[in-house]
Amino acid sequence: MAKCAHNAGCNGFDVSWLDQTLDELSRLPVIGYMPGGRAAAEPTALAALAFAAHGRIEEATKAAVALVSMQQTNGEVAVRALEKSPGWPTSLSICAWIAIDAPSHRGLIRTE
View 1: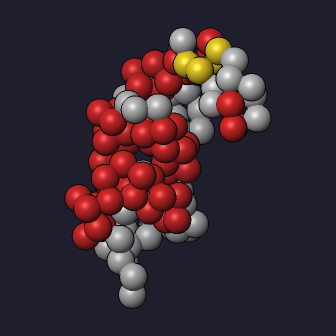
View 2: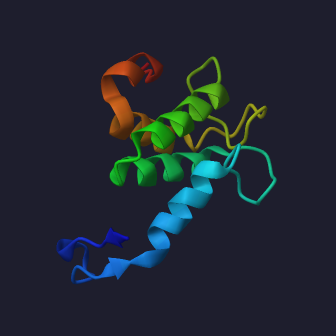
């Protein structure tokens, strides 16, 4: 059972639903806005950050790779797989890449 950090405002109590939720997310072939929907960058990036924060590096890496597959040639990450725009989820994707493994994802982060 996951333990909420004392400094997170929950006084260190057990969070029973957290591991279950992360387990369920890790079993999904893609993470989208709806069960069975297309892969979407925002929920995928947020899941990657949650996985990384809870030491689930293998699952976090899988989500990071999914984000790479959504990245456009101009560096933007579109809302959903196979869409070209809008690219507002790019910043969330960069946060996920940095949280998981900044050195190996550095080449994906374009600063131009």
